[in-house]
Image (cartoon, one colour):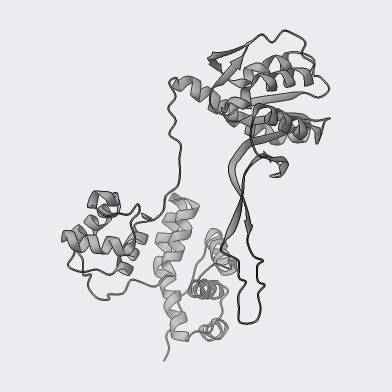
Length: 361
C-alpha cells in the first residue's frame, strides 16, 4: 500500500525563485522538471498527475517532494540571512543530483596544486619556445618535472576550467605611472563625472558627450582574385593573396548616451589639422547643440590649432598667449573660462581623459 505524499510548504520568495527556474530558457531540463514538481505539489496535485505532467515516474516525484521537505528548514534560514543570489543557489542545490561516488581520484591535492602553479608560470621559465601554455605542453611539462606520472591534455583542461585559469589567453592593459596620485584621482573623477552627467545633459540641455579616439595603421587590402560564391556542397572561397594599398587612419566619436558612431574621419594621417577638422565636422552635425569631447593625452588633442578653433567657435576674444611645451595640465583648463561667461550660441567643451596634456597658455 503506497504511503502518503509529503506535505510541502513554500514561502512567497521560494515560489518566485521556482517560477523563475521554470520560465528561464537557459535552465537545465532536470532542474525545470524538479521545480515544476514542487510547484505542482504545493498546488496539491497528486503524484500520479504530477508524474504524467512532467514525464517522470511517480516514485521520482515522491523522492523530490521528500527532498524539499527535508531541506525546507535550511532554506528558511538561508532566505532570512543570505543574499538573493545565495538563496537561489541553495534552492538549485536542493533540486540538483547529489554527488556520486565514482572512481577514486588519480591525483592528490598536492599534485593538482603543483599542476595549477605550473600553469601560472611563463613557459620560457621551463625552456619551452612558446609564449602561452597549451594543454598538450602543460601535460608534457608536468610529466617531465615528475609532478604526475601521466596525464592527458583533456584532463589538464578540465582541471584548469575548474580553477578558472586560462593560460592560453591574454589581453593588453595599461599600467598607470602617475607622479601625483592625488592629481590623477581628481582627473579620473572629472572624467567619470562627465560620463555620469552625459544622459542628463543630453536630455535636458541638448548636449552631446562623445568619446573620441583614433585607430591608426588600418591596412587597405585588395584580393587579387574575386571571391567564389557558396554553392551546394562547397563553402565560399576567398582568395588568399592580396595587394597592399597602404594604411589609413580612422578617427571616431562614440556617443556616450546613444551608442552611435558620429561623423567618423578616414584619412592617411592624424595630424593636428586633421583632428581640428574632425572636431569641426562633428560639431557641424548638430551646430545648435553643446558638445563635450572626452579624449586621451595625445599631443594633437591639446594642440594650439584646436585651442584657437575652440576660442573662435565659442567667441572668446581674449589673448590666448603662446604654447608652453614644458608645462602640463588638463586640457579642460583651456575651456574652463567658457562656463564663466554667458553661454555662446554654439559652445564646445573639451575634457582630457584622466591624464595630463600639454598646455597652451
